[in-house]
Image 1 (cartoon, rainbow, N blue to C red):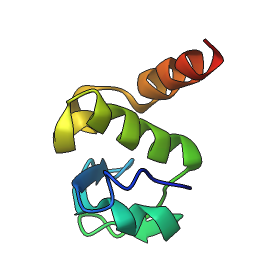
Image 2: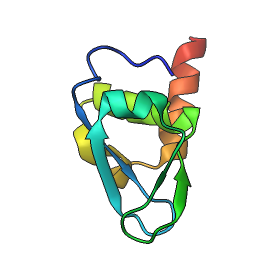
Image 3: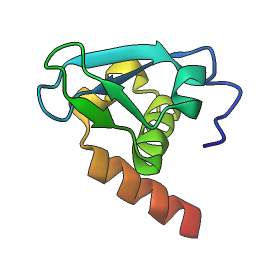
Image 4: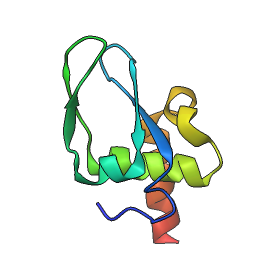
Length: 86
């Protein structure tokens, strides 16, 4: 996924879908990753294109690294899709 250069050095947080354990990495790490092994439960967690859009959308909305704890991924992806259509 192309990632804004503004996010490449920012700390982004993604939560395990099984246990909600937070993985914090710089934006550049998320560019090439499609999955990771959770440090909390050991589950292999997929990171979809929609997840990456949600991370970027959350960051640019000013929600910062805790965005996916406070917002549902589906809501952010849906809002992003609507914004792209308008």
